[in-house]
Length: 255
Image (spheres, one colour):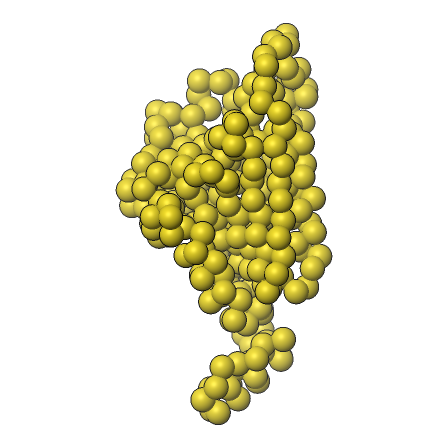
C-alpha cells in the first residue's frame, strides 16, 4: 500500500575539498535535513570520491541551518512498497559503511536533531562534536522498522548491549548532556563555535601521520580481537620522518 504525501523537494549534498580537508554538508533545511534515497545515494558517491582523492587527510560531515539530520525521509517511505523500502535500507547501510571504512579520520559536526538512520550514520564517524542543541536517538518502534545487525552493533559498540536495547525499546531521544555522558559525542561546544572547532580539530589531525590515523581506526573498529596478531608497528616512511623531526626539534613533514 502506498500513501501519497506531499514532501519537501530533495535537498543536496555538497563537497568542498581544500587544504587536505574534505567538508561534506547535508543541505535540506525545509525538512530538517532529512535524507531522501537520492541524498543517500549522493552521500555514497561523495564518500567514494573522498576515498579516491589521496590529498584528503580528514573529513568533516555537517548539516546546514542548525540541524544535522532528522534521519531518512519517512514521507518518502510511505510511497514505497515493502521491497522498495528494504532496498532503501540496503542503500543506507552501503552509504554508512562507505564513510565508516574511509582510511582517514571522519569528524561529525552534530548540531540539532540526529535521529534514525542519521543517528546511525553519525556513529560511523570517528569523532563527534555536539552542541547544546544536539538530540540523538533512533525511534523506530513507532514505525515498524527492524534494525539490522550492523545498525545495532554500531550503537552497541559505543554504549553497550543493554543500553542499546533500552534506547531502541523506549524510543527515547537523548539531549546533549546524556549524549555526552553516554559517549555518543566526544565534545560539546556552542552552535556558533561548532564549525570553527571542527575545522581547527581537522587541521590538527591533518598534521598527523596518515599511517598512524589509519591504523588506530582499523584497530578501534574491530569488534573482536584476532587470535594471532601479526602487525607492523611502524610505517616505513612516516616513522623515520617522525623520529628525525623529534630529534631535530621541528614539526614532521609527513607525506
